[in-house]
Length: 311
Image (tube, rainbow, N blue to C red; front, side, top):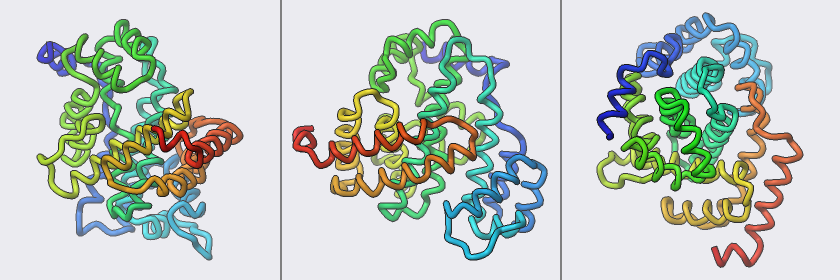
C-alpha cells in the first residue's frame, strides 16, 4: 500500500510545486559569499513580497528601530538573511498553493493551522533560547504539507478521512496509514525531498507527529522538537476544546523540552502579539482579534486553575 501511494505521488502532474524564486532565495541564503544587497536585488523581482518585507521590517516584529526602513537592502540587513529567506519562501509557497484545486479539502482551515503553528514554533524557540528559530518557523509551516499532497492524489477519499478524524491529528495519522499505507508526515517528508529542501526540513516534517529520537544530529533534533510542539500550541486556537488543548500543550512541553509550565504564558503572549503581523503578511484570516484574545484569556485562566494539575 505504501508503495502504491508514493507511486501515485511520483506520477501526479498536479502535485504542489515550489516557485522558482523561493528556491533561489533559500539557496542564496546558504551562500556565504552572498550579501544583503545581492539578496535584496533578487527579492526585488517579487514586488508583492518586497512591499511585505518593508512593512514587516518597520513593524518591530524582529527588532525595535528608531528610523524607518526604506530600502530592501536595509530590510534584509535588519531582519537577517535567514529570516528574509524563510519569510520569502513561506510567502511564495502560500501564495502559490492557496488557490489550488483540492476538491472538498478545507484549504482555509489547513493554512490557518499551519501558519498558527509557524508563529507558535518561533515563539517557543525564542523563549527557550534556541537560535535557529527561523528554521522552526518554516519547518512548522511545512509540517502538514503532506495533507495537501494526499488531497491531490485522493481528492474524493481524503476529505472523508479528515472528517472521520474530526481534526484530531493522532486519529488522522491512524486513518491515513489504514487507507494509504503512509501518513501525511511521511508523505510531506517525501515531498520535501522531491523539492530538494534542506535535510533539516525533511526531518522536521517526518518527525512532526512522532519524534524520531536518536537518529538526528543535535541541531536537527532540537528543530524537530519545536516543530512537533508547534502544532500542539496552534491547536489552542484551532480546537473547540481549549482546556484540552492547553493540557496537551503543557504535557508536550514538559515531555519534549523538560520545561516548566510557567513558560506557557509568555509563549502564548508572544503568539497573540504576532498573529496580526503574520496574518497581514500572508493575507489570511487567523481569527478575529476579539476571538483570538478571548481564547488567550481562557488559556490563561486554565493555566491558573486546578484543572491544569489534573491534566
